[in-house]
Length: 482
Length: 100
Image (cartoon, rainbow over the protein chains, first blue to last red):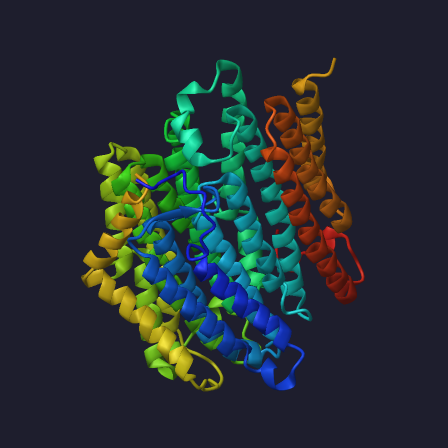
């Protein structure tokens, strides 16, 4: 176990965060220099790489510091690696899109670094106060990033909607933290977990109210039904690389915090499993059914991301280390193939005037055979076909649910996967079978875009065939605090 | 005398006003104000609990929350200005390019 009495101010614990913050500040200062402006992506990449290396170095060496406010165990490290890798991939394929839309501003890269740092803070603490701060450090740059395309009305709308819904959710979360603090006298999840049975009768009501409000706050952030209404609008309106960023990092950070709070801090609460059960069923079903009738690919992927949040919530309803490590595995897997599909959409949107409508994919297999082959792989992975990592992820998730005795939940989950096959395969069908009228403007691949597609493809197929290593990592993450 | 329940009652009431404001208001500025009201209701609850439990943690937390609320308001108002420049309206019903 981790030594909880550590009060030391040890900067090596937060070194990955410091690296990102340094990169962000260098970019913000260099905005005023014409030559330095163009270096912003390079500085951000360097910061992310340094941060990744330090994070890998921290693996297997759990530490607590800053008066118990910051904990860096394997769970933290695994999530830090996930955040940094997703940000790096976004950085690689985003630049070309921003240049083509004439919105390539150095501030974006600083915001990306700060937001990634916020996610890291969220994953690396057992204190509710720090979780709240991390959430806000992550979210405020996200609001700006969603509204980054200042002249686009859609982007404006996405930004303001995300801001209002995000702040609304923060209000619930904060009220929840207030009640938990009031009933347990502390905001440290370790102390709450240890003294759980000593919470007096009178305070039990406050504590339950606090737990539910906290859950509502996070349900907004991870896009669980019925708190999902902002997701499709924001995903459709935001610039595509930013949408890709939303769908992986912040979601994983929200789940990391949920894991810490509900499976570590409040693991003795009985009724919370039932609430997660309902959330999971609603989220999966509503996400998948609404995705069926979407004509816009970004909007469809938004509903698909809601549905995937539902699959991950299954693990929360089940609880226990097997289900939780399956959830971590699924977050990694989902990150890979989801970023891959968004990279392809970005590549297509670089053509001017493309609104990422489904019909615009017609004839893709003729014009870009490799691109449509890659798109097929990612869609199969999203639907959960073997031999992709999407299948393995769902397999572990539902096996854990059956082992936990949640038969009905598993049946609903599998039925939902069948529904989802329809709309994922529709994308494949349009790109292969439908004829395209007019001339296709050929799009050049940048080396960075090629690299992103190759990495995500290799990950999706490679981890689908050899999942052992990633499974081992996700188990290590969960055993760090169980 | 006033006990903790009185303060909590006020906090929950303010929170409710904030939530109602977000749900029914059509003006972005009012929406932002309602969100601030929610955060401040939570602040009041934290302070009340902190006082009742006789610990200082809550008082420190409130300062952090105030900072966060200020950051959110700054970003929010900047966005309202951008959107007003493009649309000449701050009525949320007009923003329906993307369906809510």
